[in-house]
Image (cartoon, rainbow, N blue to C red; front, side, top):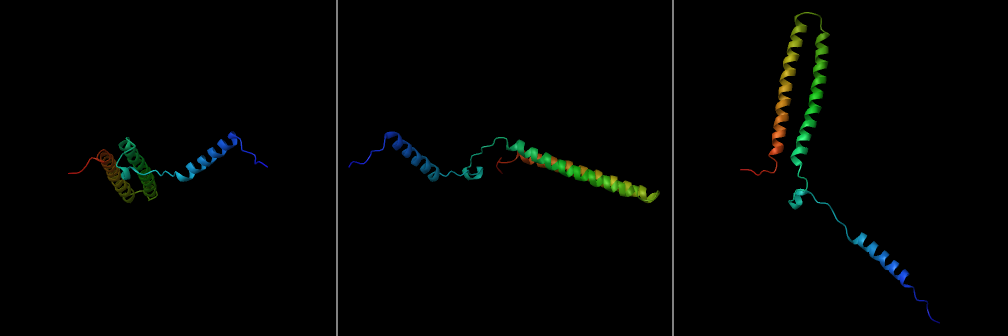
Length: 121
């Protein structure tokens, strides 16, 4: 009695399936960061850095605006008189100083974006 020989289509399908499974299980690529290879894939790192600076500034700006509003409301709750005026003047000075500080911090952050990867001396 002679065993039946598998036809070529079945043999090719089986071989293709085995190669497909082997290629999936044997090849495992892993992405590596720019620092590993020394090659920078994203050329727009300065613009993304500047966007991060702007986003951070907006968060801090919004927080400061809310704090200023709350502080002014607290001052307004004081009885009319010199204490209320002093409170409002102090809050105005504090708010102005903080806004200048935030503006300088934003500019420094953006300037540092342009210095990234520029080497040092």
